[in-house]
Image (cartoon, rainbow, N blue to C red; front, side, top):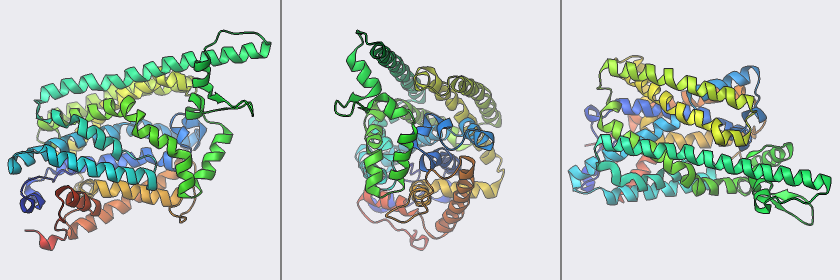
Length: 457
């Protein structure tokens, strides 16, 4: 999470929060919007089979109101909010490092110690609370891109433009390999049915369909098991997710490991890292401060949505036509949203900056700002609440995993939004930091920080 008020220096000075007049409130509001939107995209992973991310028609309903829910969330939030959140994280790196140099003359040590603790928090979150953690990826990628923060904005933009397309290229390469492997498997099945010999590549067949168990004659693992959905797989996942923490980890453990290893190399370093670096550039250009002209933000909003939505809509039509076939998704299907989501993210940034610049919907801004200032706490809180609702934590919970439709999860999302706005506003009237922000800050400086507002200097 981005701690925009963090500033290294002598511990007593560093611990002091940035005064209200110095805060970039628009960043807090934007971060709050992003965190609320991230919940919309995370809740299907809590509520349904994790494979439904790849094939949304396979779980949660894909007709009527359920389809409208999916389409709306896809157009407005999917990858858009993560992109904004990542850009703000990159902006936070620059702000943190700048203040570190001002007060201490160096920044790298504190930054890497800070990322180390974020990594620890992320590991606990992923393996104990929820498997969809993003903190580990943020911590590791944040360590990698940190040396770039000193560069001028134009060079940061160029680097971001180099990093971001790599993710699409990797998707395409994977898709081409998947297509070849599936073709080899289909040839082997056809040859076996006819009792003919075939020159298919056994390693490609195994990559697609999994390793053959000679005793049972069945295959396990492979690309199919990673991405395709079968009634048997969904039943196994439902049973695991309604069971104990150990059962959940046993089932989704491979997904966690993939996310924390291959996922970073194949996707996180390029998409997340590219957004981090882009956020550094936008911060240096003052885009997140709501100080650019109204014309600038209006144009950013209009062009972002006008360019992004048609690209995403084309992807929706293409993916629907191909029934969300996994090979098509990797070759082309996901890349529509990969590109379009960046433009829509810019549209969101422009819209929120306009709202802040002209002080529109002030009460809503206050609530979103409070969520944004406690983003770390609220992110983990969302996992705890959804974990309790859908699969339970330590044997306690409602066990609604696999029982609700896609549309039926939306009232839960709205309820969490309202609760977190109220709780965050209440908390920040009494304390300087959210609970986890305080813990992270205290661990970074290796000293307990003053928490209550009455102790502020």
